[in-house]
Image (tube, rainbow, N blue to C red; front, side, top):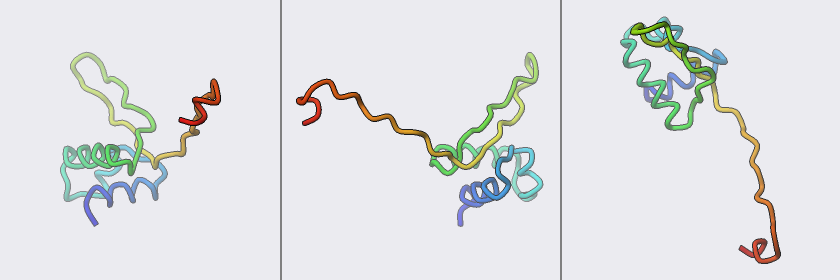
Length: 88
């Protein structure tokens, strides 16, 4: 199992987690590696960003965001204008 999959599985088990919380779970990894792993898991569709990190002030950076398992989004069906659009 890759590190990205381990991160995603840990977040799913916890419900939601930030990179700071995951540092205790993976003490052998640096904070940068955990952050990149979370971003990769989000890009692959394993996780989604539940709450983006807030700003800590001018020049102080951002707080870590919360990640969670992806939720099902409702799919909208396209409106049908005519029989010709139904055939397409």
